[in-house]
Length: 409
Image 1: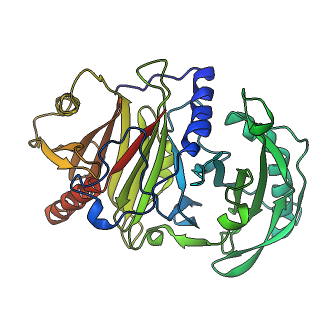
Image 2 (image 1 turned 60 degrees about the vertical axis):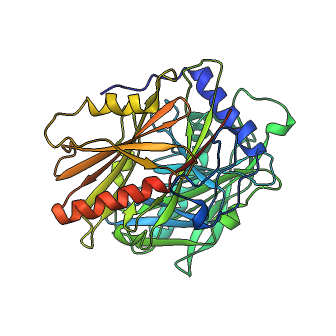
Image 3 (image 1 turned 120 degrees about the horizontal axis):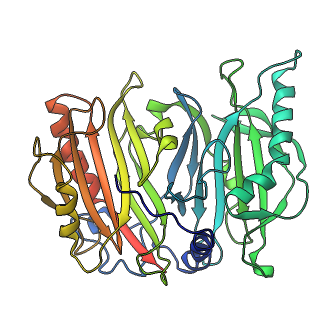
């Protein structure tokens, strides 16, 4: 496997700051009708352009069976890739999402995830354990922010009792008082964000194995609010997280082949029903940056979508990337290269089938997509029979036809 190069500390901070300073200054496009998407029917030039933005859901697995699901309005984008030395989680299993204010201005940073609650000792009730866990989390917030290259500089963070609705029912929780944060290595009065964090234990978790959920938001005036983020919270069996399909929206923060460029890439596509984040997301290494699995009714994966990335040679065409990747596979099961139009006018993905590398998979296909000077390698693996493989190939092609991207720097 070719590993993505490590980004130096100062460079990775500059990348994040470029995202904060530039991405939010461009208004995002409102939803286009379906007739304007797919088959290359989108915008003419992805460089510096807007991109369709949709309401979506984010989920984080609490254990092997259930997930926290957050319904979000438009303008939230999951921060990738996970190969950066900077964690893409504030703590434990989690995600970082950026909210781009369509009126311009600074982005807001949303952190969501969970950490294990300390086991019961000395007869403490669940409420007491939750209070202790929330207090400990608040005490550790400054260190957690430091790990993601932000600074919490307003002093100790206090928590107070709060209630939250989960699946429409009130659940006891704890909410921090507002605190001040800012990205590191970036000074000035305009860099100060107001942060808040809510913590609670979802009901119905196995005794002794409860997870403390956190949702933290750093925002400025005119952005979104933590209360808005908390409007649609639920805990669901992971196979039921995505019953109808949804739009996946990723921000790809990475270095460029040109040391003087720090491009910010927005990538979005339609995921079929059944796909969800699973614990597999939190074991990614090397050049793997994103993965979702489709779970059947019994909760077992029957398909897996994985995304890798590597720097491209801009002097060579995108087809050369596909030929190179195709050459990395054995001839057994290797199919011809198929061109698939993306949702960006004139942009194509190059798809070929090959012998699966995922244990237990019966078939696999990889799409090679050039995004500026980055090559995306998107692999769909099927864990099923020939009939499932045929259906999955059609679904993979439909996903690629929905793929939209924009690049800013």
